[in-house]
Image (cartoon, rainbow, N blue to C red):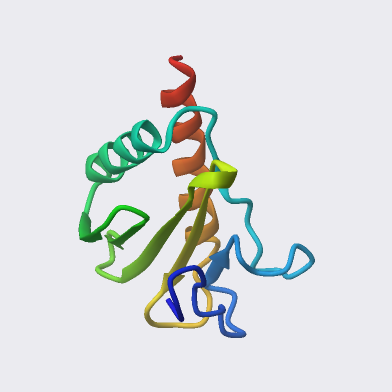
Length: 124
C-alpha cells in the first residue's frame, strides 16, 4: 500500500487485478460490498480467507487484511483487502509475485471470494 487508503497500482502485467484501478483499465475489478456492519463483514471475510487452501493471513488489522495464496504449482500471490466502512465497500487487490501471465487466476480468485462472501452475508 502507498498510504492508509491506496494500494500500489498494478504494473503493466496482466497478472494483477485491483478495485482501485480505473474502471476502464483491464486490471479493474469491482470492490466487495456489504449491507451489514463492518465488524460482521470483516469477521466473515477473515473466516472465508482462512478456509481457502494454501492460504495464510499475514496482516490482520481493523481496516486492512493481507493474505498470501499459494497455487498448486507453488507460486505465491498477494491479496490485499482494505475496508471503506463509510461506503460499506472492501477494496481488493490480487497480484502474482512472479511471471507475466497468470491465466486469469487472480481475477477468478477474487470473483470466487466475492461470490462466497456475498453468499455468507445473505445467509444462503
